[in-house]
Amino acid sequence: MHFVKWQITVTVCLIATISIALYSRSEKTLQEELGFTIQTLSDLSVSGFRTERQISIFLDKNNYSKDNLERLFRWYLRNTANKEVVVGIQVFTSVDRYKSSKNLGVGRKAYDPFAPPPQKNVPITSYDAICFKESKGLIDGGFEHAWFIYSPDLNAPNEKKTVILKGIDPYALKHVIETFDTSSKSFKVRVVTYKLHNVEPPGVYYTLSMSKVDLGTWNEVISSHFNDSTNILSKQIHFITDEICYAFFDFIYLVTTDGGKTWSGWNAEENLAGWKDGNPRFIRDVQLSLGGVGEMTLYSKSDEILILRTEDYGLHWNIR
Image (cartoon, rainbow, N blue to C red):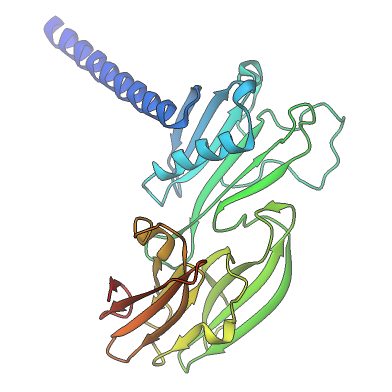
């Protein structure tokens, strides 16, 4: 009996030691890539309707900047492989404020950006910056929205700015610019363009949604920022049949072959990142036949042309 207890104790200690070693190695790798030091204060996962991962980090005030925050958050987002996980990352420049903080939750804004603060220099949040990641949309595996909110000046903690890393901030105030609808006999596609209040980068964003012809409920497929100002919505959404539709915006190509129930996405910025000079390439045109064979024409800001070919409706593309 004593032997069993001893064996269990050793096993638990061994597992804990291995976990700490792996965790330390991961944090060391992170700091080597970032070029500055951080301290992980907590890293918790809460399972429920969906898994929420809450991470709290101490960052020295001397290393606190928009650029460093973006590098830090992008590292965590790259290394959170499970798209089903909602991530909330809080950054503190004071360990004492972390210790006295309460759990504000993840997956939503933890403050009202339009509410006046009680006092100018009294923080309305315990953290100095917070990043969210959540997956939405009908694209296979989900489409990520990722954004962070931070105080540009730590001496004015209640003056907040929002920086979008991917997709949109789904809780930001929208000013609609244009709505474009098109449809087949089976389903409808809608693209709404708009500006978001108090976010970076500024400019025009869009959301593509679908709905069955006989329904009024719209389901989000994807939301993102327009990097190219030459988009013409009416020329960028094409129905091949009543069930097959494709669309393209900037770097992103989308296709559905089942009447809009599911969509597949292809991102030129990600898939062509290592191609030759590495310049970003915008999709200028896509032409597909009923059999799924077609070509995609891309161009860079230096007007260099690249043509890709597909034989499966754009699920895969190869350089011609």
